[in-house]
Length: 231
Image 1 (cartoon, helix red, strand yellow):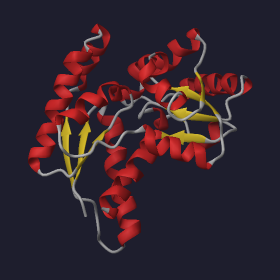
Image 2 (cartoon, rainbow, N blue to C red):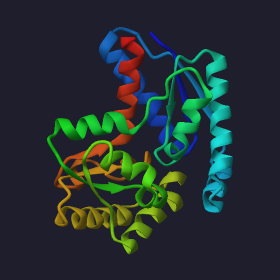
Image 3 (cartoon, one colour):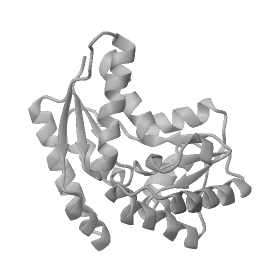
C-alpha cells in the first residue's frame, strides 16, 4: 500500500471526511482491521482565507508547495489536496515535487461521463464558480457544458460556504437556499450538479437535487484510496 499525503485544513471541517472515507474504502477493499497509510499536513485556514480575499495566489502557491514538500520528505507516495478552490495552484504544487498529485476533478469527470451526462451545474466558492481554472478543465478538456448560478445566487452559495460551512454551521435555511439555486440550474439544463467545494456535502446530498449529485470530496477520497491500493 502506498502512503497518501493529505494537504488539509482548508477547512478542517472537510478534511475530516477525507480521512474517514479513505479509511472506509481501504477497510471495505482489504477487510479485517486494514486501514490507510496516511500523512497529514493541516494548515491554518485563517491565513489562507485572508490570502484569498487579497487575491494573493502566489502566497497560496508558496505555502501549499511547502506543505507538499513536507509530505514528500516525510515519505508520502502521492498527494491529495483536500480542497477544490486551491486547485487553482495545482500545477505549481505538482511541479514542486516528484510524487503525483491526484487532481480532484479527474474522478469527478469520470463519474460524470459514466452517468452519460453532458451538462452539469457547478456550485463552489466564487473563485471556483467564476474563474477559468476549474470550469475550463471541465469544459475544454472534457467537453462538458458547465452552468454556474446567476450572480446573486453565486453570492449566496459563496457566503454560506465561508460564513457557515467552514465554521461547522449547517443551517436548514441555507439548505433551502441551495435547493433553490440547484433547481434554477436544472431548469437551465443542468443534468447533474457538481459539489465543487469540499464543504458543500455537509449541506447537500443526493436527495436535494432531483438530478445526480457529484460529491467531489467522496470521489477524490475514493480515487486516492484506489490509487494507494493499486500501484
